[in-house]
Length: 473
Image 1: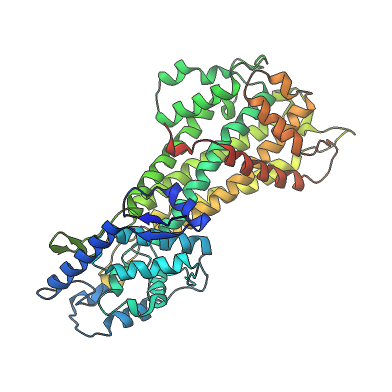
Image 2: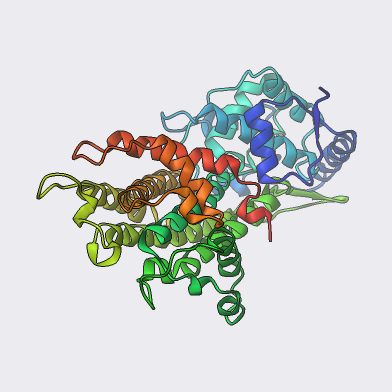
């Protein structure tokens, strides 16, 4: 297979993740090589007649200190490779290097294409350097990219160290991975919600197209359309005129998460294809700027986490309804057997434990502040921290959804409903999937294995979805 060309344009977050996961060979496109050669010549000419940050000056508060020391770059890499002790996962490193090459291919860094070629060599040989967290606060992944510079060896000279660091590539890698995982979970929430709807004999009027035409919020409209696709034709009469919020506000709460997944995907797509360099080589000049500031992606991550917190909260309300005989007409806690059996009582505790983790991780990282380098740098986005929190929240959200899935399937089983009873509604085959793998015992026992199976089912269902929510209208 021929290597995939990196051109500095047109790379989507999903494509980037796929290239990284498959370890696809890549190469710098010829046009990108030409752009990099031209920008390297321009910055060399400009630096001969006026200061260029990081090339002929120090960095940070040392921006006003001129230098012609040929060892300046080596010292910069050495000092800036100060990080914490926790290594990035290899999949993040691989994806981060891929993204940095694609950014360099856009041609604004002033780096020679030999630098991009050296990074491509590490990728294609799967000879990934050990890069560490620490020192990145959303103003460039300085520490890990300095470690990358050291790993590249002589291809980095005294003038190319700072341009290599002018990127949030590792943070963007984690954003891409979070975007894909968030899309996977957002896509399975309607499947789990539809099974809860069946168990609670919900009123499908809430998904009527006229309801959502009356308030056409984009994500809400898409969720309602998805739910109609799952529930249309369901032959079960609704148990209530008006359902509890977990069913009645389903589209209104999941919809914003779809919108915020869109926003994150769009923001990340821009940045992984951007020449977000400081200084930026533009035409025949060099422009000093603040494009290293990661506020767009930090805010997108914060907004997504806040919206997913509400999704998780609403899931736990459906669990509460499912264990309540006033809503299901079934036994308390869906218990079976001897009197005072506990059934799925502990599922609620597991769900709220996971919800607490979701809530903690949902706190906005962008509320942080920083004053650094003798006041030369007075603000930070904390995008790297937002990315880490997003990964933590998504893992906890999976536990919440697994809790709802186990509870909803048990309620359906206890009610004696089969997939055929749901025909012709499209939710039936998904119920058949769940019934086939979740244990059918209704006796009091540990449900830990059930939850683990449910987490796996969510992964399988996510893999079977045709569209990522932020890749479709």
